[in-house]
Length: 189
Image 1 (cartoon, one colour):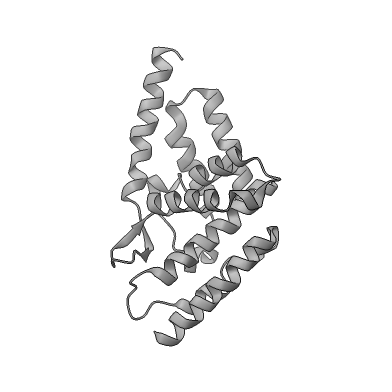
Image 2 (cartoon, helix red, strand yellow):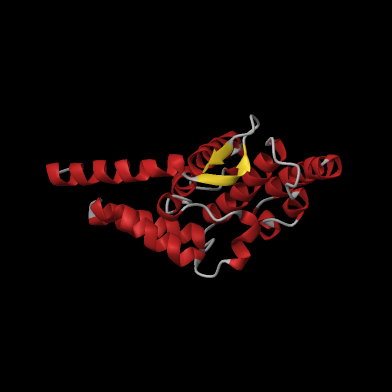
């Protein structure tokens, strides 16, 4: 790697740090807002925990998709899951933001990262479909675990991301358990 490419990579990493400050609509178990970087970390951990169930997948690609899936949010923030369907252009904005973030990277690396992000966004591979499912499950897990405000809409969880659960039987098994948690939280809320 040339000195210029190395500087470009460091510039990218400095810009990507902004994801640590992007807050999501969910709350941690201590009651503070969760960051998108924290969500991404637990999504990666979740994939690692269940890696043995996904033997047919390229696990390196799974982790790369996990790491990159929300990186574009570093510039314009997170769109809460509950309103994503009402946000036309969300995907285009994230793509543009990711391209902006990666402009200092060597072109081949930027192209590779953008291709992975596009694969995730379009659920275009078995790995991307699994990561999409795990992403939705991690969000539901956090919603159920968080110290949320009294008006938190737990019922939303019951329909959220259902279309991605067909990607693997394990996703549906996890979903069944999380739906039971959601119902308990909803009835107690």
